[in-house]
Amino acid sequence: MNDDKIPLAGVIGSPIAHSRSPALHGHWLRTNGLRGHYVPMDVGQSNLAEVLRALPKAGFVGVNVTIPHKEAALELADVVADRAALIGAANTLTFKPDGKIYADNTDGYGFMENLRTAAPHWDPSVGPATVLGAGGASRAVICSLLDAGVPEIRLSNRTRARAEALRQEFGTRVVVYDWVQAGNALDGAATVVNASSLGMIGKAELRVPLDGLSPDAVVTDLVYAPLDTALLQRARERGCVTVDGLGMLIHQAVPGFERWFGVRPVVDEETRRVALGQ
Image (tube, rainbow, N blue to C red):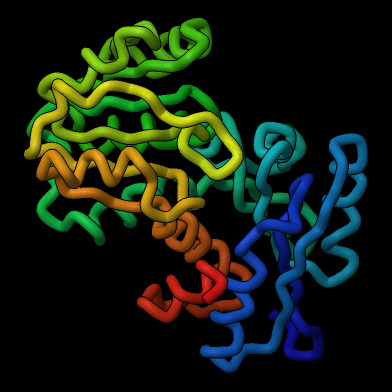
């Protein structure tokens, strides 16, 4: 990193005003005494390629990419990490000195770090995992769970075709359940993940029955607004260990910050407060 230049990074999406990433990275820059800035950029799909090619010339060392650009960013990259290629989307871009774009996906890393930190006794090998939702977040979750050694993933999505497409990609350890049968997919599951937007503020409720949910299961919800979702509340009432979604947001940001600014940030309670806007 050239000491004469202040490194710049940011997050690209549309919309982007709601993003907590600028506050999170700004906190890490301040606490580590680093020069640098991290800014939100609302960029439309038609302008994405032009903006990404221009950013290195403006002093940017990298960016996070969020909805709706994760798949397009992967296609625009010059070099793609294996895990980003497997997931089929990129959320972390690093600009090389020659301006080339290196694409990675740290969503799976963030998911696993959050799960292991908040539920340290979680063992992926003890039983099936049920994953609700088949969007981009689900792809990262499935990939990381399979890699961790989960013996079977029971996948259910409101549109069955999307779930079937993921089964085709990830193989026979993924078993698809119709959405109306999603409750059955919980029976005997050791891990349950809501990777859909259901239960988020402004979205429909997650109405999957929990009758078959074991009290020994670990239940996590990628939704973090609200932080304590109805799913997590209901799971706790059944005796389950629950993990909220804020940690995934925080942990997925760590590798990018380290690459761009040269310091690996610490994730602690103050970090959580900043991410929550407190």
